[in-house]
Image (cartoon, rainbow, N blue to C red):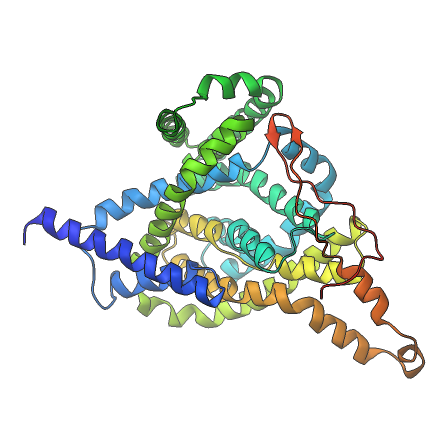
Length: 433
């Protein structure tokens, strides 16, 4: 068979298969990420039917997928929102880092993988999945909940931290010296600071320069600018993903909204290709030896994420039931854990299988934890009450805390970008469970 013909057949089969898997995941109410990973495992090296003709194309598509994931993430936030969250939520961000990055680092050291792998695995266990969590919040009807801004605040801090973490990890993986790594980090911090300053002071001018009433022109300019900046960032060893994220932050208002609508389908396509590519490069036979460490690590970091959410919600004045919901919602890991592991497999190949098993566990467990953490905690708490305390009706405070309102997010303009705002919900609001 001609090489081009084989490429077209394999690509068509991959894209069609991804569509079927995505539809199946939607039917059962779960993220499609684990199915994409399993598909990659099935058709990759050591799988049932290795794909050869399309391997190079899929690898390039995977790179574009990472860039688009970070670009659209940046489009979700305004520079003022990032600065505001950094000022108000940094204690929760510190707790999140300590509780969830340390288990990954310790696990890598115990397994004897070395300090560089420890930094990489710390990132795998630290960063929650913004995509999975956003979908879960929508599916459960919690977008108007009192705790939702807290969840978003933690995610924003994690995303902003990625702009520092990824260049540092890239420098370590490249084997740079302490001086070289410090220089890369300084370049990254300077770039982030400069972009935030320009976005705050001159965001409208940047957006006006990019803006176009023609959707085709807007798509080409934003996509071309993003790929160009990502390539330059990669050359400077700052990370292509961070470059794409910063382009997203720099755009605001109608330009950001229009670019998001145009690029979202492309993001979904190439992100799916990225997850398949990661699975293609993971030997299924390498997963069973790391399954027990993955299960232990998943169990520990489920508890630490719940503790993180509890702390963050408590700081924000959210009552008990909302604290449990916050923690349960933050459990899911996904796209960024795979991105980090994909960077690190060249230094420590065993990170790939461990990260795959870990993400498969938590991307399935995440929606379940979001749904059941609060009811389970409430039942356990009731069971622990003394007879005297149990005689006092306790459902009212719990019901008062559940606070799902009938109002959706409103989107006032702030710093040129539509920013979600949560309605003021009193502690006596009726519960939806």
